Image 1 (cartoon, one colour):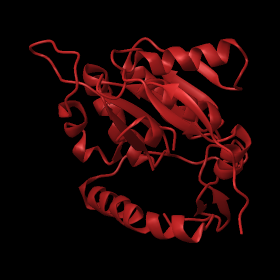
Image 2 (cartoon, helix red, strand yellow):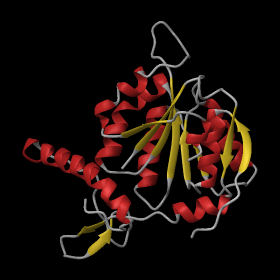
Image 3 (cartoon, chains in turn purple, blue):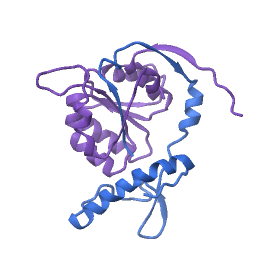
Length: 150
Length: 95
């Protein structure tokens, strides 16, 4: 029988839960560009990196297109990769998503699903991820903060 | 294979909840070190599918229509086989 592991209860929002999961998963490279409502994820991750709580290389890119290009390139080596985006950021990544799945690079990306403009709207909507249906990426949807930590 | 994990903007991303967190080491032991599928080189050697100066390889090369959809079909098969590979915890996925 497997031993029982004691879990700690943390009060976290969804973004913090994702950042915590990434921290625990020993990710080697994070290349990202901040965008609402995903910003807290990369903020927390950059905090972990600055505090030397993780051995992750944090790459600030000039756009989401570059972020995914960096993730793909790093993933082609031995690195474990994470990035996060939302809405227009995911739309800007569109081209690189096909390249990443075509190269079968196991990049993990959190998408804080948000409406696409216009009209400009920062709130929840799945139009961003649905637009990437045919990009060859697996899509998983989290139900709550708990499922994001897993 | 790449994965998008979707969380509803603000509804989930900015809502405070309680979450049960595993110890760091338990998660580390679960994810282990990254494993690679193996591919066959033209010389007949099996090598891990990654960029390495010792065994150079091209990723994402040009494919004309005669091969393009074979490539896409192979990717779909890889997804279908993925769950079996996961179940058997097999290190060398057929790609």
